Amino acid sequence: QKEVEQDPGPLSVPEGAIVSLNCTYSNSAFQYFMWYRQYSRKGPELLMYTYSSGNKEDGRFTAQVDKSSKYISLFIRDSQPSDSATYLCAMSRSGTYKYIFGTGTRLKVLA
Amino acid sequence: EADIYQTPRYLVIGTGKKITLECSQTMGHDKMYWYQQDPGMELHLIHYSYGVNSTEKGDLSSESTVSRIRTEHFPLTLESARPSHTSQYLCASSGGYTPNNEQFFGPGTRLTVL
Figure 1 (cartoon, helix red, strand yellow):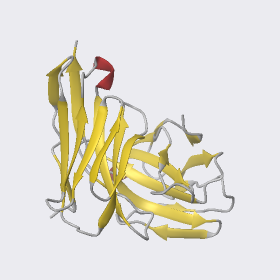
Figure 2 (figure 1 turned 60 degrees about the horizontal axis):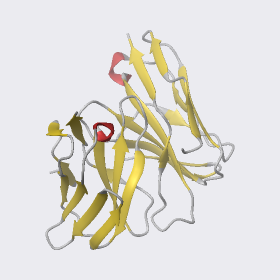
Figure 3 (figure 1 turned 135 degrees about the vertical axis):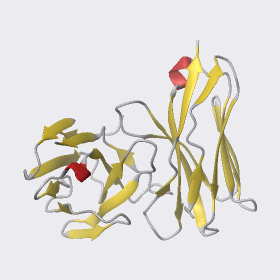
Figure 4 (figure 1 turned 45 degrees about the vertical axis):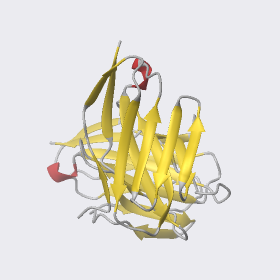
């Protein structure tokens, strides 16, 4: 079983929709939770990170962590065609610099 | 935008050739990483370095080797390329002052071995 599971999609939504992207994980030692966005033929760039449980909001993006369920989410409000990309979740434990990544979910926002 | 560079961006090469993928960063980060990314698959860590003259193999076995002679430079070498090495290779770096040691990624090198 993979440590991090993520639905690869693709997910197609109309412009303006609320998008929900999710990852589940099995290792309860994970403390740091990241969401990266990767455009085609580019490297990933960090969108959001959360330490431990709770919510974090940044503009149209909200990251949620539910450690009891081992489940993290990224919500995108008022989605735009420019949000079309692959979204990768990543996690790490305290005391290590190594990340474990999900497979990424490919999102397409239709104009 | 992160100051981390990878060359070449695309490489098509024949079997048996020796290749070096270059990675440089100008952020003074002590930690650097190489990942392999295949379509629809997660990023797999193949090498990492916590500083000059420090290199470790990652979670995914790889026939490549790395060196870290200078802080800013972390090249990856394949002595004899094979078609199974065809993949996207991503370099990343992180410093010691952010709470979660955010990893900054380069644009990647897409390698095709014929």
